Image (tube, rainbow, N blue to C red; front, side):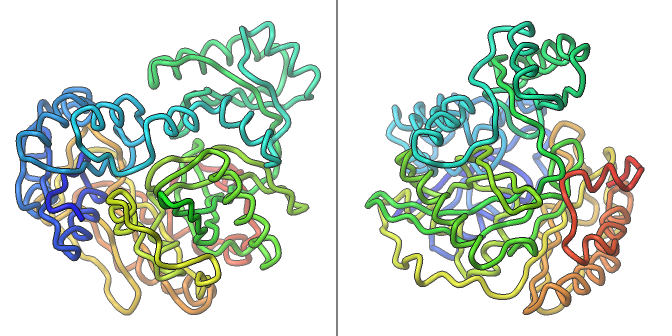
Length: 440
């Protein structure tokens, strides 16, 4: 097992990883930008080192500086968290080059699964159902021809995309050229790769994903599914496990398919296979995330498996000490992402308590929220024996949560949780649009 680990991230996920390391007896190194000098993860780590200016490209996206910090502090491994360099194959390769263990899959697997076109073709070859669509498109003209065959509406998607970037819905032929150029340019700017492909737009659909762990011995275990259909601009707002729309039979089929997808890729470490599910219960492969997900806590609560600790163990060569038969999804867990609606100073801060209520965050009273990074302030997570009680518990927790001095989306989340469609589990990815507002 590692004795010293560097966390190449910030915010709540850096805090989460540091706490896991403390429980495992692993010494931690935090890296921080000039804007994060007073951040909580810096105070909690055993050692901290500044890696550059306030902007992400000057610090958290500079793989060379992060590896240099690991070498200077003699850290044996780097945990990338999520976002930033977590799915960057070049960074994973750079770690390996310098003898540092990257806590995640190999650079080769990240590159293979990060390329949506390659991943789709791999899934097709291994009998995993995929949404009707195309391979890489040469230009807008080819996209127009393909859409004519597939049938409108269609989604244009960046091959290297993620986080809702490089995606455009095209409902009519006259929209195609502009949508193609806009999405391609956005993807080029965000990922350095403007290649696009197309998928049939399925509506209404649910966004269902399967969390899995895979070790170096070839053991793959799925930790149930998560429902992630409450989204705004293709970015998740609320996640829950298990999905109220997935039966035991469908769950078994989903997990078998996800495990097959992971084995086809030769996957090692924690990963998530994402699917779209239509009203008839048919599901289609969308993509595979080769990192820890923001919403991993809901899977941990319903299965009792600490995913972060197992990421570290697997990276150290430890074999999974449980099998698929040992995993039972019990109870219900819900997570609400609390996002800032602008910068500000936290002048009052109250976190709700009670059994199975937690708020994963990096905030404290008096903290100045920097304007340079992701808007997420924290994750309100609850667990109960039934979904009905978990919803009531979440509503109570959100009503009690106070982040004073910083505009946020708590009220919007309360509105969603109170909605009858959410309570019934009868909601789809178009839920936010159907509210007829720009909130949440």
